[in-house]
Length: 137
Image 1 (cartoon, one colour):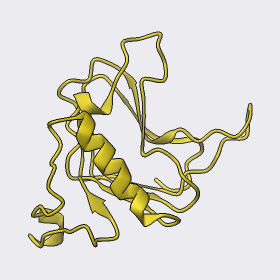
Image 2 (tube, one colour):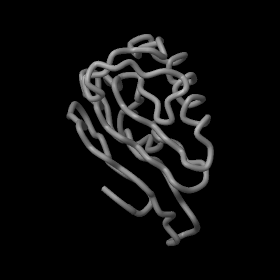
Image 3 (cartoon, one colour):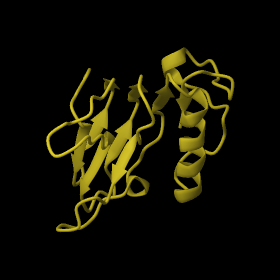
């Protein structure tokens, strides 16, 4: 998905968001500039949902990779309730922002991998490290 307006993929209930590339979100200009995030967690419960092996690539200013619990009319959904391992996150403007996002995400959820060096099948078993431009979770 490339150049989507305001948000990327919306997850509701227990579903799978796997093997996607979402890049270059564009701000919505309808009722003012809005840019929600790459994966939108909208309606729960989502325990057992899978958000894995996705590439989230942002080439503009700072935007959240995940947008959680925005709509309070339904049971809210949080990324920590889904399996969100093995995704790549990258900001062109600030490569360190992806690392900051992962560190904050790891503090919130114990199910996410805490090691910055993990084998990855998509890289042929090579390990990723903190010096990698795109970060694995």
